Length: 340
Image 1 (cartoon, helix red, strand yellow):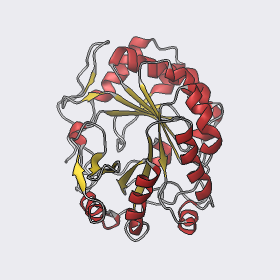
Image 2 (cartoon, helix red, strand yellow):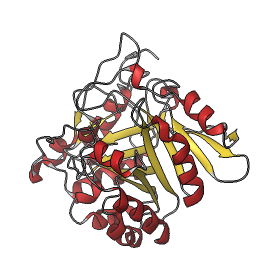
Image 3 (tube, one colour):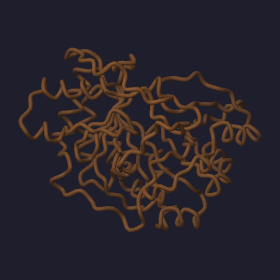
Image 4 (cartoon, helix red, strand yellow):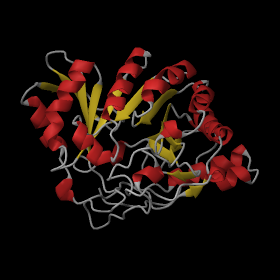
């Protein structure tokens, strides 16, 4: 879908929904709580890491709660997902979860699972209902090669502990890369069926830190589903505004999903906005412009002034990211700096 700035920002009144110039209603907020991570996944950040944000550069829990409350209570946001970097390396994360769990919202966390064995119960007790665990290989040697950490046993233990803690659903996110881990598609399908978790395969996107992405590295949704269906027949599930296209196993063995941001773009139904760890508001994962929420918060801005910026940001959202077209512009930040 080509990028198209549209007719210009449309300002909507406070207490209305966040609607852009293409009529998309925004109900899903992604909040990155840190840019730091205890893994070094090669498609996410360089092996040597990045220059981390200072403690003062991060939004405080109180600042995060203020923005979240405004978006939920005044603009109808229904879902909040906490991301990173790796969110569990942020000190006192259950405290933030408890603060946000007071809001009438579906609260979720995306994590690499490295510390989930000890964190799952405190997070559940704080009010976390759902969790996504990023896991790109079930082979210990390959996992270490991908993350530069020998962490697979800890992640698998974390998945089990999250289930035991009553977090439901537990989902496993797999970024599929051709020639890297595409031979594990069926292994992950079996893993999901055996563990009772939902596996979601994600097409490889051009947000890798080393900027080596090409369309040849993308394993398409059709390839993924064809591979799984050859062993476990699938039935499509009606699509919603959620990013994953869902399929249920014909034999009742659960379901599987694919986030096909490259080959089956779903920009026309996108309802997501993002807040980075350093307080920049983004209207798209692939946005090239950001809006300085942190500066506004720390300048003593009123809720009305913050609302005006939110409306202006959403009103300027493009029709689509344009991956695979001549109009595509790669964001200046990698995934770990934006938030998953």
